[in-house]
Length: 421
Image (cartoon, rainbow, N blue to C red; front, side):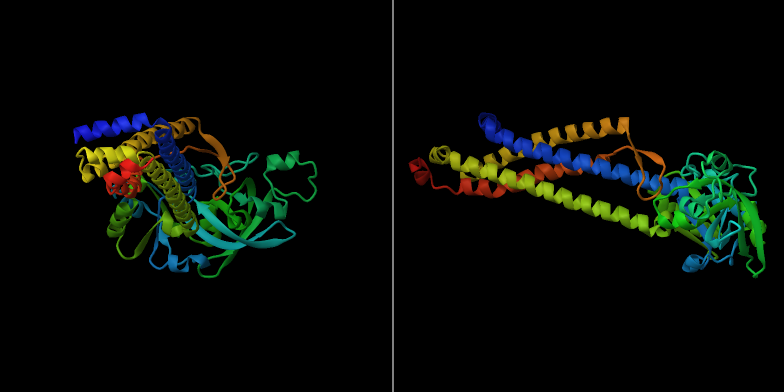
């Protein structure tokens, strides 16, 4: 085997042009797969980060049956917002923070017109424990809700534009301030049907890539929402942060076991199917592109190996005539292809990983298309397992691609091969 290996190495080195073509195909294909994967994974991480750390939290706890009717934003059944329940949630291994919220609906008015809105009552004191990037999507000129706020609100950008509403600082600088308001009235009903309304100051506008968020959502402090709805000491959901998203399913299962059947625990994927489907489609497209690239690589290797067979017919005939066995000829060609696959694959892995690391170190400023209009930094990333799989696929692909040309070379008739010109 060692003699065949050294012979294969010499053959690869001797046929430089053909070997370089094959190496380039493997190297560039592997590099393209890794760089593309790095960008897609970086975009997915950015999207998940904005959703999990800026919107929903990693997990949410609701009363049993709540999510089945979540589109109606029911206020009952609700959760007690007390330390005993929060302590049970925090006691689960992997949980790093928890906060309470109220999701509700009602009418928002600027004194001249009104429209439906979806309200989010946020416990500003603990919101960032569960959602560290809370308020990241508030546009310049306004501010996020802060601890101690009460009659304040953050409006979706399009909703605010329809009412000509803006923060006081922006209103003061507006070129045409006629009809511009910095206060709106929120009206809603308690779980028992009692109507109530409260005036709030518009402290900021948020910008999202989700049309619903822009057109309908109003965020207010939890205490104001509880007073507006007559739900003091109650919330409709708990948002939960975890230390490792890769351990999310285990933490969710432990939390369900801890809280019992009267509560439901849902992961962010279950609560955001739109984003989950986008990620699935991206990974599907990534897989399809990878397959196409590897087919191109394999086609190039097959073509190169067949050229090698045709160009070396007399050489193969001579080897068979002097006693080399057919299986040794087959093995020699397979070793040549494996060598090309290994060198090209390793080169592609090194080049692709270097490119991804270099771009990740610098970062690419961008505005999220799906989740927010704020500036974020895209950092491509690669998992070691994917890099290893790509290398293995490149080597195995080279080996498989060379199988038929190698078999054809081993089947040549020595006499006919020596007669060829």
